[in-house]
Image (cartoon, rainbow, N blue to C red; front, side, top):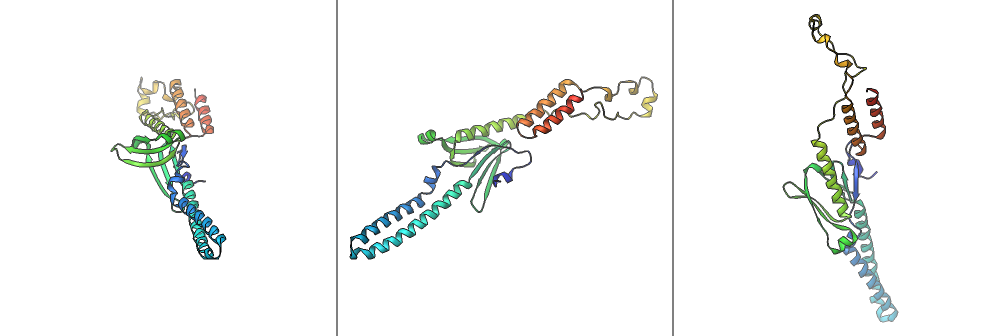
Length: 251
């Protein structure tokens, strides 16, 4: 299991996962590639000097040592940059945007979707062709809380983030579904006071709520709500089917 998956809360579902574009390795690993290039040039020059004769053997040996050191440093730094790139994990869930990085020491930053005000996507010509860009997530105070540099498929990431924010806002503004009434058929009837039962025309003569069947519209509304929770991954299909059978049995 990835480290980012261990940060998810109960009922939280990952809907989009991304990391920086592979071109980020070239821009962020320039020192590593420069060291490798210097090492290769030094190695080639050293070999040529050693073949030139006795006068160039000393200089060729020295350049060979420099070449080996430069190559070792460059390859080591490049391997670390590759691990760091693979460790970067950007998630959009049904509740948050999560940014995780770090090889050994992990850093995790997250932003609640309801606090996000806007997202600014910047793409150059090459970024539009290859599908990467810089994404800044803004709060209501217009301050950037998350910055994603050279994010792969940045437009899709932004679109999914805003879609999940809209769905969460609709969910928060929607009135709660009708509760499953405990006094539907099969439940115990509410107790009636002795004074009420003694007086004629009192509530005891009125039909008890225990005998009133559930309204079909309420059942359908509850089923629609459960279906939305199933589609978003908040409940499992098995839980949905069990609750559906329970509701239909009460009609």
